[in-house]
Image 1: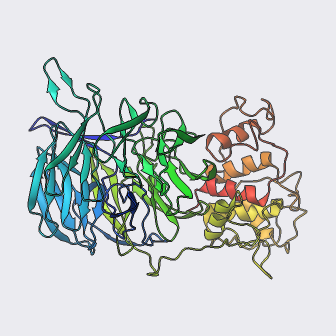
Image 2: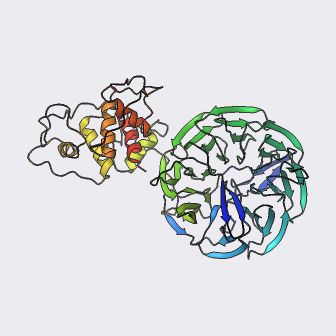
Image 3: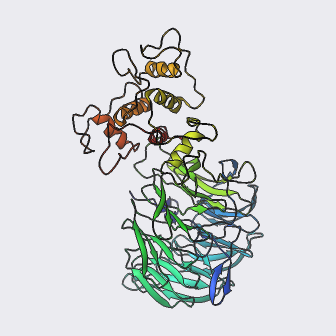
Length: 617
């Protein structure tokens, strides 16, 4: 599965092909010098790619803990946005290409048109300037007045730039071109990194020296002042603040085009790779650690917590990870579709990320903006995006901004969405709902989602609320779980009447109505001739049938089995139901290649089954 890293727009009247990277646009962080080192100062606005020059993607402002939509900007905004210190949001559109400055209330402040034959992207903002790359084939770097959009200066660059501007301690802007100068015979220099002064004059250029192989990532600056960037062929490269080469690592294997490094407060450099690893390097280029992941980490950078203890990153298979500083996976969240934009981490402990659909998506598939509790990966909320979304960014007032792309005929409709927390405080629950399900419990996020969806109220309410995650599920309890999962938390079955239909379920049994309704909907026929066995435990094999019938209807029959689990041989009575449950991503089994079909389902396992089967938020 490969991401749509570049968006191509063809304007037939002009016969110009426009290419724009779907990487996030650039963001700024102010910095201070202490004892010949460079330390990041937390800012409460999102001024460049990755929020600051280290690409930490960490905001000192609280983000929304609920998906409360404040406004949608009516005109097109494509890709990613940045936010100035006064809360002004800057973004751009296609055909015609327009740079727009939007007030915090969603009204237009000013706009600057570049016309149909150009593109505007890769933005950054400081107090006295807005920076943008303008150009379809050859790029020009512009500085605009943030008050009225007038041009302050421009600097011509070689070829197209897919890099985002990174702003250094002294205001120097670092930005790369895809290729350098053209040479007779058809070759180009291999990409330049420009260091441009705040007045628009050139400070220095670093020539990467590899013909026809350039730079499409954004530079990050470490606390030692060194500059790190990903070269398409040379891998991760380190330069000093004067543009002098220090070291390189990976030869193109470490990292990937469009991958940008992030730097922790201790100088550790984090970068994803195309060989199914996530890596940490020391400031001298030596490897600190690497960890194996399930997919490529492509076209993005990471988010790093303020103290450097946790690093967040998504992969192209839809897995979203939290790593500790030693390379161990603290938790993982499965989102289902590729994650190609950097995540965003708020001061109140929420991590946000977006997805992108690929060519395998069906008409009913949707990408989402996700908000997870950073401590344990529990889902707080999600919001439908359509095709995909840009990088989430947080403004100084705590508003979360993200662009949303939706198919419309043969093209796409792109708008900017603004979310604010309803309570005005953006608080986040710091303790688990159930006293017996701590934040670190393996199924905590699923149990919390089941509770938030109103499917369960726990097993004990006094003296404290408990869930009993390791207790087994009875067939009576399962009837309640399934029907609420199918019809919603407010569902109440019809009255029992004169009979439940089962001789072992009296009409005054606590779950009589639920059991009768489950049978009426064709989900179960009982456990034998006229009996239901309400107090018997549910096995994992039985659960596969119950779940798939509840999800797809009583008449559903899965495809024949092929032999996926070693303990579910072909011919086993529930083989095709178990394999279909795995095929739909509802289960991965109970261990390496096994399903444990005859084991009883625990309440923790039931939470996972229900959340995945019914896509509970």
